[in-house]
Length: 381
Image 1 (cartoon, rainbow, N blue to C red):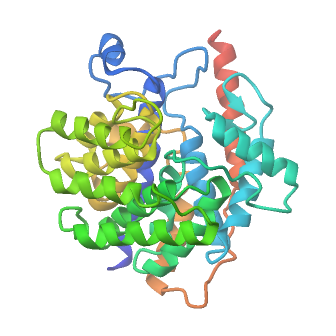
Image 2: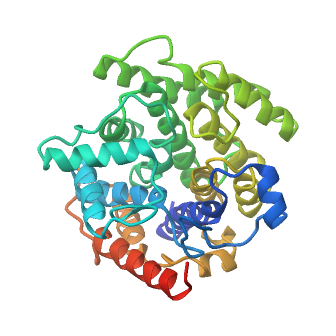
């Protein structure tokens, strides 16, 4: 691949992720019926409604964590976990805690808040101090930069995933979800499509990561390969009618969940499998993102994952201009893209690393949060 092709596909993945996140924020935890009642079909970037008002186009913690991982991989590609953990704390400290905020993190879930609070208490001594046993989508949602950094190096992708995942979780199901998404993004970057991906190799890479995580962390058990089994079930059924597939994904996920789950629930076996399916099945990136966020539930995360996967395959030119122009972060992370392109084309040997952004992530996120708060005050929100 030449530099321009790699640049387009990484940019498509990055912008797809940011857009999917921002597009889904207003309808997070809403049902499809509630979304239809308010928006018909949501197709535009909208404000996130009260009580956690945020302006249209401003991304959530999903994208914040993703860029934190990107920066960690550029600074320390073969040991990203300590840098990633440090950056999560720095973002927290970048902005005063307010309604809907966890420090500088926007739109967080309970498990992530616990992780960051424990990292703060550890004072940098242990990047894994906040790890929990949780099988949510929080690893998969941020994992795309591993494919951006190592698009042709599967062993380094797996090593980076195992390092970073443990900052948040020790559950192999979450690792399997992250591995599956990374492999899809890497394939998209390498081939410019998702249609030719080999199901057997995809499932094998996922299962390998699950098993290695379980063995390293002593968490092997009946659900070690639950995600790769769910991925297998989806791929065996695809292609089929959309409603049939979503019902099947929810049924497979529900069999290993302690509560009923829909296809876009935060459980990895639900939302991550759904995101991979939508990214493959939709005719365009635009259609994939619209379909994703209108499912509701964990809409911003599903949107982010779909955007990262399909954007990698379709490239920057497939990203609708109206959405890109509406992002608060439009172009803000281009320096990361250029560093990633340089790494991919130079085939960094010996690990590389040491790269630092023009503006730190904590600085940009703190600035955007302050701007959003001023806008909120001016509008009386």
